Structures are given as structure tokens and as C-alpha cells.
Image 1 (cartoon, rainbow, N blue to C red):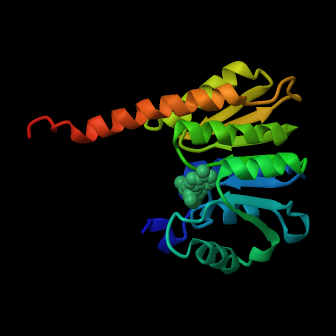
Image 2: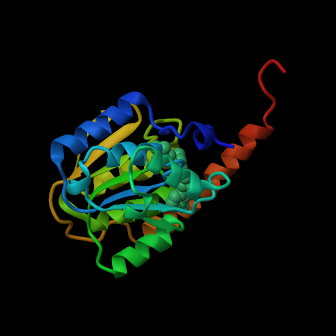
Length: 219
Ligand SMILES: C[S@@+](CC[C@H](N)C(=O)[O-])C[C@H]1O[C@@H](n2cnc3c(N)ncnc32)[C@H](O)[C@@H]1O
């Protein structure tokens, strides 16, 4: 069982959470807000609390809800305990990629995205496709952007080098805050990006299992 399932706390650090809430309170973004990967909803709750009830934009959460048992009920309880109505959150129980395809077909747009799902390179690459739906002037934040998570850092660095209409505003610990400065001239993330990431993921898996099998120094 993950600790957050019982503590109901955010799985981001205090400084990262402060950076997120300061950003939302300053920017007052009006369009829908998206979280990919919610755990117990600890960060979601704090993001929602940045807005008075009457001014809160729509929140959408994408998560397969298999992180720990009873995850959907625990998230709802967490929100309710903070005086937030869980029925006002648009929960989409599923993985990021199929949910993205549905959202794109429906022509959805978002003003804010917090991406904190799987750390595997092919999943993060798929999460990055959601930026197609980010309004110009909107903000996307990535968690676990540090060298412990190559599956997170590699696709994000490639993305930022390729799409020059995204500008890093700030990095606070492992939280990377990025603004979409203008509309894109080409769709973010293509079929080759996804295939390439799947191939690299095979190497990441092989490296991880080799590390597990290698005898520890001194043993
Ligand atoms: C690190 S936790 C999220 C922590 C949460 N954002 C917070 O700050 O408290 C990762 C979450 O991502 C979800 N997840 C894993 N794979 C996913 C995928 N392919 N698409 C969407 N969510 C995914 C897990 O179910 C889990 O709830």
C-alpha cells in the first residue's frame, strides 16, 4: 500500500506544492485544468483549493485508479474532507493515451496541466501529446523531472528542444513549469516519437533488470 493511500497527502514536496499553488493563484487560468496521475488526490485537493467555489475551473483527472486498492473512493474521501465536491471533478478512469485520443477527438482544450503519471519513457511521451490540447498562454507542469527518472527527463528535454513555442518558466526541485507561448505549427508528438520511446523503454527495462541481478559491491 502506498503511504499516500492512508496519509491522503500530496506526493510532491512542500516546495513543489507551494510553487504549484502560487502559480495558479497568480495566473487565474480560466480554462479546464488537467491532472494525469492523482494517487490519493493530495495535490489535486490543493490545486482545487486555489480557487473559490464560484470561480473554480473544471478539473479533469486521468488515472487508471489501480495505484492502491479502493483508490477512487479514497480520492473522493480526500476531496470531501477538504470541503470539495468530488462530483464536480471529471474523473476519467483509464490510461493517458486512450484518454488523450478521446479528448482530442472531442476537441477539448485545457489551460493548465499537471503531469505526474507513469515514469516510463513511452508513457511520458504519450502524456506529452496532451500539450496539443493546451491553450497558448497555458501552463504544463511535470513532476519527477530529475536524473533519477530518465524516462521523464529524456522525452521532456527532446520535446522542449523540438517545440520552441514552449518556454521553461521555473524549476522547483523536481517540478518543471513550462508555458506554451504560442500555438504550435505541427502536432506535438508523432507516431515516430511513440515508437522510438517504446524501443528506448526496452533498453531501460534491460538496464533495470541487469542492475537488480548485479551483485552489490562488498557482498
Ligand atoms: C506518483 S502518483 C501521482 C501523485 C499525485 N499527482 C500527487 O501529487 O499526489 C502516479 C499516479 O499515476 C497513475 N498512472 C500510472 N500510469 C498511468 C497512465 N498510463 N496514465 C495515467 N495515470 C497513470 C497511477 O495510478 C498513480 O495514481
